[in-house]
Length: 79
Image: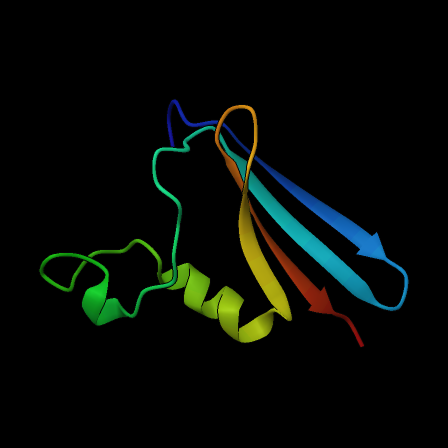
């Protein structure tokens, strides 16, 4: 997206765990998982649906603040 900076990081931990982090410079709203019917005023909004996939696959996920923007992270166990 033009004018929007973001960064993706992949961190490996002992015991077969991996953390995926996506950081961006926009911090005015915290993301939250929302079903498609609730994603927008008319139900056709696109925001939040990807987090439903993250929620289904990840052992844990969350959002943390950073100096500018936020980081959305997800921890997964890799077999």
